[in-house]
Length: 212
Image (cartoon, rainbow, N blue to C red):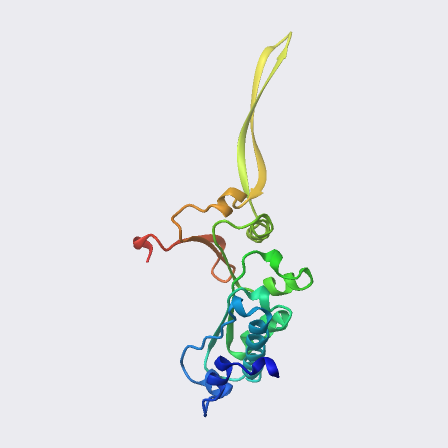
C-alpha cells in the first residue's frame, strides 16, 4: 500500500464523510485523474478507485438508482486493470452509462475488442482515424446499393452496328475511407452511428451554429 501514501491521495481520502455510495447517490461531478508524469503509479491508483466505484454501482443491478455517466478517457490504459467487457455488458442494468474514449480500436486487446465495441450502442468517429478504426466503422455502417447505366456496342456483317443499354447494380460501402477519415465540415466534425436512432450515419459539426 506504499503507492497510496502520497500527498494528493492522503488529502482526498482524509476528508470525513466521503463515501463511494454517496458519490453515486448524490448529483455532482467527480474527476479521477491519472497524470502521465506519474506513470504506472497513477494508473494503479486511479484503477483501484474506479474499480471500487464500479463495484458499488454494479451492486445496484436491476434496482432504481440515480443515473450515472462514467467517462473513461484513454480507456485502453486501464484495460489490464479494469474488466472492460464485463463493465460494458452489465453497466446499463445498474443505471450506469459508459463513454469510452480511445485513439484507435487497435489499442484495445484483440481478445476483448469485439465484446467491448459490440456493447457500445453509439459510435462516434472523429477525423484522422487510422486504417483499423475506419475499416471497423465502415463495416459497422454496412453497404448500399448503387446503380450504373451500361452501354455496349456490337457489330455484325448482316445487321451492322447495334447498341445495347442496361443497368448494373453493385454493393458499395455506405461511406468510403476518405469520407470516414476526413468528413466534410470544420475542425470539430464527426460521424455518429447509433442503431437505436437510425441505420444511417449522422454528420455532426460543432463549428456550425445553425446546427446547434
